[in-house]
Image (cartoon, rainbow, N blue to C red):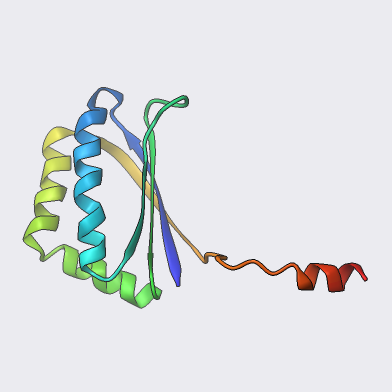
Length: 112
């Protein structure tokens, strides 16, 4: 599994429009087999930073989603909404491998 961690530099005066954009992408990612972990919008922090996290079973599955998103009418509408409203100044993607299960036994063994 891979998790895509996206940081967005957004226009601070267009936070409501960015939230519309964010809410549209949650079901779109899931439509293509991903698991969306949500968007995180500015609160008590920088007013131009937002984050999104979503996972796919593999990098190949993510790449398939990306390719299909450029052909899907709803995804294209979301891209167009962001562009026409000038809500995203830039974004950066990072791919991470999640650790989702805990196990204290190796730690105890190493300390013995």
